[in-house]
View 1 (cartoon, protein in one colour):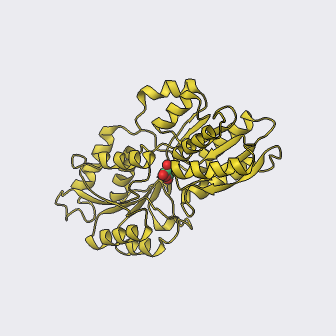
View 2 (view 1 turned 45 degrees about the vertical axis):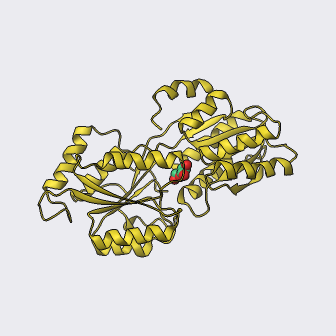
View 3 (view 1 turned 90 degrees about the horizontal axis):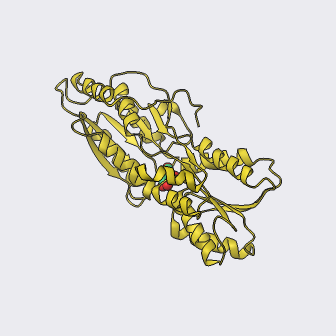
Length: 329
Ligand code: AHR
């Protein structure tokens, strides 16, 4: 993960629309030769995956509107399949869109497509997901909260919650996804040398509540229920682990503490009830920052290779209760 070089704070809406309209009036590349036609954006998206993804992709679509001077062409993956994304990406290049937004289902395998976009002089901006290896020459910028820092915040909470250590298990997202590797990196770095903690292992549950419940049922059985901590790399998997804990006759939040990443409404409700014990937000609502970055790129301006999206953490039922009334996802 690139060190954070700049954080775009919440820019004013007026400034954003001005930047977008300037892009249109200047006849930004591909948006018609100075005709003021809307700027066409191809959004190679993940598609249905869970509450976080729904919030993130809806926010992008709600931001890049005709009123803002854009035509957004939304292309969700077919069953999370990378080939369907590469096909959509190629179609957008052949169509000559002005810019491509990419949320990659797989971190690797993008060099050829990104190289073709470069040859066609179509800028690419990464939304949330990175590429591996991370060649910042192949894209204009990536917008995402800092996954390493987010998972580090979970580890720091765990160390403060279990001063004498604990036996823990990690429920990972799908193999090969950039944010999973980054979250593993943050957790591993923060837990290195913590000899009072016992790593019982990790396994993917593919962001799924049902799969996480099944995986963690097996973990509890094979460890005689002697597990005190779960790091679930998204909310849905944490809620699945909680179901497994309850069905084992144990109490989540007491016998087993579960920490998750995302900060969806369902997770905060579970935190409020004590079913989850810690929720690290991975803020999906950065359409405004993406609009600003797109406007700058289309005007030929400079943006940093990584734009960090601010996120927070929730460590108690009281924190959840305070946030829930205004929760936007
Ligand atoms: O890339 C972000 C991750 O993808 C979220 O943490 C998870 O819920 C989503 O499916």
